[in-house]
Length: 138
Image (cartoon, rainbow, N blue to C red; front, side, top):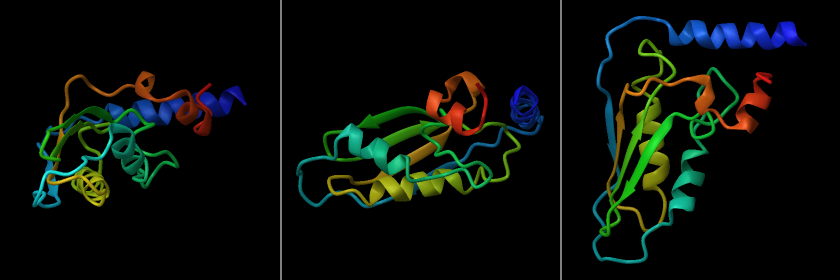
């Protein structure tokens, strides 16, 4: 089993070490709320984000530790900073849009902007214990 753990960890570390341009990605979804209403809770936003999975791993992007910040404004707009496991990640243009769309579907959410940031760099330590267990990293 420890061989499997080392192999999985080695694959993640290898994926993180790909050196490519750190292109800026930004995705927007939703529309401004017509009237101020009860805005979605942070817990509801997190649950919506948890519905988005990295297509190469059986772990959602929130538990992977890819979400760095969630800011809500009083008008229902939401701004999310997220990262990827590596700058060369092949789903860089897809995941931010999926996160924006998932959150924009919540009642009480207006415009959602998801921006990819690269600092601080993602590490395995950002993953939840549940995500590490799913990938046999314990």
